[in-house]
Length: 415
Image 1 (cartoon, rainbow, N blue to C red):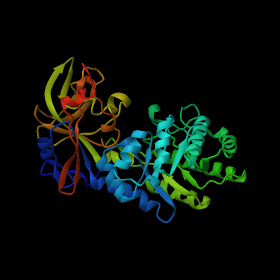
Image 2: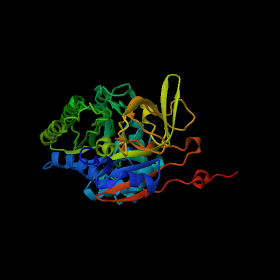
Image 3: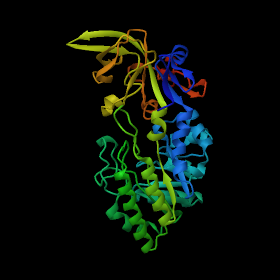
Image 4: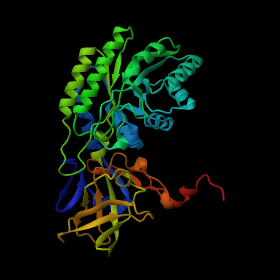
């Protein structure tokens, strides 16, 4: 992010912190997050929606670190959760439960009960069976569950198929053609205040046109529901705004998108909910790694580093692109290499055929735009301890998650 990660006298800084110092003292692999970048990105939504009732709910699945969640909660954010574990995390971080929205296609009885007990804002329900269960549990607990039905507006997000969620063939939500009848059937369920409508068509959208089209289809649905007697008080349009992972990519036209959804909210007189995750956290983070070896073979060059698919699975899973920057510019020119990790899988790569500065063993590099869907998807495959996480705020930094130890790998196991 411009002005957050930049070079000073050939050394990469995050805000006012020299990242070679972080790599040297905290060790690698290591995730680093910028507090300023998180606040700035969250502020884009608050400024764009000022004057209309709204709630910006950070998607916890993008980055669940407690320090990140606390920072956003203190800035005024709500949270979009998809599990009981994420509910536990946001409450532990000091979130206001009245600003928490529970999404997800497979909520368990125990998770629903915990959310009802906490007093969350609302549930985004994804099936008729879930509505029936929610009604039953709320009635038994003497609560009223505020809810929305997640609708598939059948808009093609034109993104990677694994992160596209808004077509009728996807597992998420209810086909928009069936939604009105389901609202009518659910209206009489006890313990349920069916006051919302929601959608989420996918993520990493750099073109805002599909998001605006989905919002307009949802607005038309709200008007039809109201004509049939359903009072819709809030509209949740999900997340989806992407970020530029490549140097040649452009930022999405966020101002255009926010102006469009702001207009819809004013026209319908509803509370507007948005659920950004990647847009807030992605550019705020980098993964630091150390070069272990250089190797040539089969007409290729390999740069073997101590970070792998266990720290950042996005390249292996989505063929995702992340820019790679040396922590210290070397002046040794560039070369083309596959940047790979130590894990025993051919899919363990961070970049393929990438032109990168001519790094040598012992040099450090940063995998950029790694603040979203990075640590949260990390694993212990090959019995690798998960990395530490660091939060930078101005000229100060602190470890906000300790690196796992070998003993942590066997906690709870019996030989």
